[in-house]
Image (cartoon, rainbow, N blue to C red; front, side, top):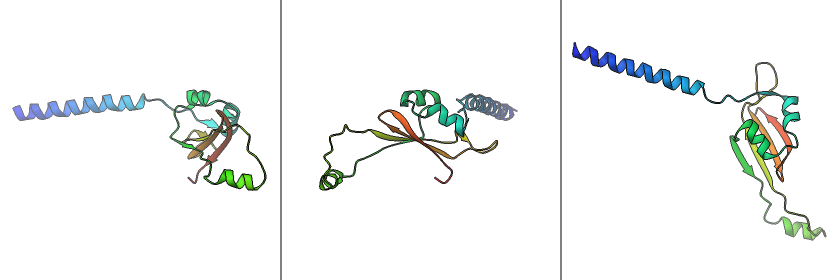
Length: 126
């Protein structure tokens, strides 16, 4: 008799914990999906802050790196590089852009040049 009470108590606690956990997962932030043109209009030329406020943190970030021998090659060509340094960073988001009613692109790459979104690409093969 006491064994049945212990088992029923454990089962009830497990069910209660499962319901609490599943409601917490369902209540998590839902990412808004955009159409292709809506996404381009909303984020082209915008700052990193505006993009991160609207979409949250990206799944992955990559920083562009200047090749080691780039200055030597440019000086051989006769050009002197007097330009300001350029900061290029790529942000990747998953499943935020729809290409039809039921499907989203697997990956969206946003390229920021000096804190402005200069290039947006949609991919299904990465």
